[in-house]
Length: 631
Image (cartoon, rainbow, N blue to C red; front, top):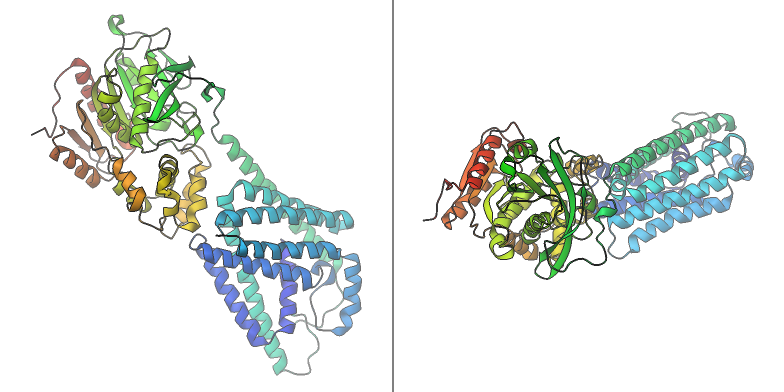
């Protein structure tokens, strides 16, 4: 970084001697303002970022091709013609001209590529910058091999740091966008300030004739003296070592985050041939993580469908109490988990907390009452293929087919009665499950459906996500799922171009993995609208409306809502339940003061005993007591 700054100072010195002072000052002000805009609003405008990168790359390229040689070897730039022999001598022992030319050409090629690439995107910028850093680092290494002494180690360390940073840029493209914006922005600000200072000094020098040559980098400096290579060499080495250490630290953090990302194992890979009908068990194996004493669990792989024409395979968990009253087959609580992510590794059965990750905090309450749990991961989480995030049919079929498949387990038997519980995304799934069960899975009769803070009004929710801290993360899952389920919507096109790469990378991270902090930081740093087109309009809006669970639910229905929920707004839930009641759907609607989105379903929530008693009544066949009934 020291050498890079030195090259910029050298090019500024040249500009200060060759351009009229007024032009130098004007160019400097423009660079400073442009750089400040990029630093302060890195995600504001793709066009602004592209302009900044092009400008920075051109300046660096020109500095390499026509600027002074390494200032660490030659000292400050002067206007003294007699210094020519000193410069030529320094050039003889400095960097080879071909490496300078290669690096300069690389920066200029980067600028040209960003400009002429069809429909340039931030993805292109990130890839070009990452590749450019790798190539520049290799060239620095070549220079280091050809050098000697302190200079050799400085260049080798700087080259290694550049290669590492380039690899990291390619591995974390969304982070690269922010870093590139800040680095180029800061460089442009520094460049602009130096150009302004150089112009001011030139103007003063012209107003004061008779002064000798001065170093343009140092106000009021005496005529440039002989270079001090040892002092500059040590400073360059210290800077290069610091850069290498920083790059190594970043690489260590990156590797740690990558390793912490949940990974599926071979269990989740379906065999080449699976049963054609949905709800068939493909394989099962014992599961112990997070399972309390007195219960036996399996993870299962089973067939399902996303819709009428698209078969799929899904995974899930089955937990059965070891002791059941009267040795009867236990009734089933079919659990539909809340949002865990959209990537394959985000399946609850893969995660370290297989129940808590999906907001299931009542495992002990369920098992102590002699009930079994069948908890789907949903298709696409754990298994290959698209995850139907907030796509009603796909979610509901995963829930129902998990119950069917669990009945085929050896060594246990499940009762016929089933009550569906679901929270958030799972609440949406539960409502859809209640709607499609009579036709899709009449062999899975439902004794009740409990939707807890359900994502019911999808159009309102997606529009509201921008106003929720970190809401862009959930929006990224919607974009990913709807692009896969409904290609004609082109959901990604609704996202502002400058945010598309960030949204794509957000969708690849699970909510429980450490790297989601990167997603949250990016979501909080966005100071521009996420959407370039209102998501409730056009084809995407139509599909979101189609997936609002408005179908009738034949089973007794409980809807619970936290009054302090800022993600699923109580007013939106009130309106949704009101619509159901107007349509003649009996609903037992309960709200809980002081409970937010996740707090509603925690073990200490007043909902917990209410939900358990309501479920006991459903299994007992007691008539429900809805707060609104069919008229």
